Length: 237
Ligand SMILES: Nc1ncnc2c1ncn2[C@@H]1O[C@H](COP(=O)(O)OP(=O)(O)OP(=O)(O)O)[C@@H](O)[C@H]1O
Image (tube, rainbow, N blue to C red; front, side, top):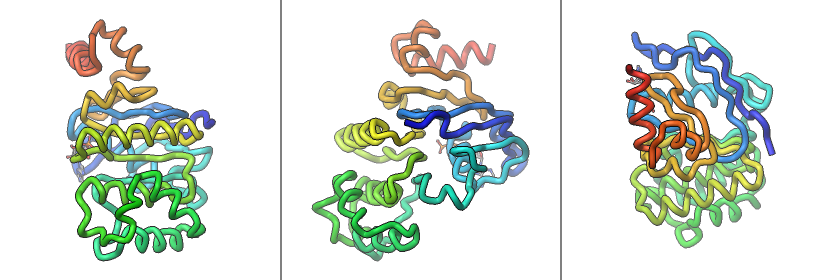
């Protein structure tokens, strides 16, 4: 198990002329931590900071004691962006072989990650001919190479049908049970219930942090969606 895989202190990010993250302080530990908030609130920007690809105005992001984006974290951190990161003109397995070489990971990993994302029957198919959901799972398979200890997933279930979403959430929890810290963003409130811990974000700030049950209880709401609306109203007032 990992404690405080990520420590964020005073993180301030400006993109263009806009303050996107405002002096954030947050830690992310083990289990499945969900980052939820409306479109444009800064979720992807925060995730980019965790993997060290975002220019920051102030503050620090430390991942397993190293500055985010350090070379030493290359195999420790898996990252899936909203855009599929696999090559359309290669098969699933050819993509994985390529990324094994890039990451310096043994090819014996390929069967494990293909099984994990349930793409066994499509392993030799060209990625460009996969469905959107299958392509997302191929990207996720790449992120699982090398058994990362922190997995950063930017809206991995967008465009997936309910059955696939259910399967992926099952996978996130299996990975978390094996000790991977899973940090996953979504703007679908019903997915919030599946997280061990929730961070609710609005306009670049974390406005609630706790288990789904704690957040609902504190807001006196019967769903995370209602809790979020109540917290937003309180925050605005
Ligand atoms: N390349 C960029 N240059 C300038 N501003 C940007 C850029 N990318 C994003 N932004 C702005 O930063 C803010 C936060 O964007 P971000 O992508 O982090 O939001 P998000 O919560 O992930 O949204 P979504 O759920 O729609 O993906 C938005 O106001 C957006 O307009």
